[in-house]
Image (cartoon, rainbow, N blue to C red; front, top):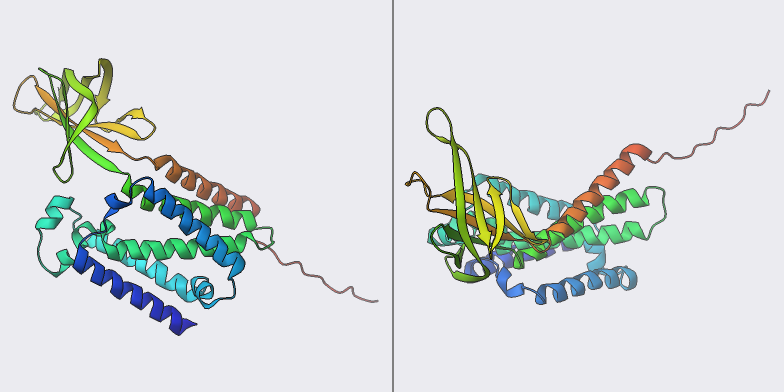
Length: 299
């Protein structure tokens, strides 16, 4: 079994490297809604069917094996090391890089085929062992399920939600309204709402450097107050951030607003809450203790 598991993951690693070199980074945009939802349902249903109906098959035993745990965790931790060791650039800046590291996607590693394949393997393994524990009796069943299912849900929402996530930047002018925003790749996007700057205040330190700034903008006639690190939620999936402003004028004539769209962020939060609940249950109940019986002493 160990040999088959090693061969499987070595093959996946080589295939992901080949795909990265041949096609570039993983095309998350292609798997946008509703394709991402359809694939997610097929994936989850496939894991459930495989465990219930094909539990004794070689493939299922591989995904439930301890060797699979070593591979998936090692792959994920290795990816995290790459993200920490190499500067993570925007898509357009990463494309301008050259060399082997750039070809392997090290400068935008979370969207590389190598990282995505490893994350897919980790989620599949995590889902399978969660299903196995769910169908086994035991007092610690719900603690285990909440911890592992919560982790799976948080990673899953981040993985699948990447196809729907979008970051836009829009200059908001004082003299006129604007609905023309730009993606990280520099593509132009027209918003349904128009934004206009109505007021801007900058607070300075004694040495003259800016200490704090906030803006009053109009979103289709609705007043909105924006501050640094205090986003404004226009909907459950869209937040506005104030990022910069016109530093050349004593009275700024424009500011830059970043629009972040994350449709699955609450699903990710649900996963985090589940992990917290599982951790609390584990702390309160303590580990399982085997019942031991002691023979009575005869006088």
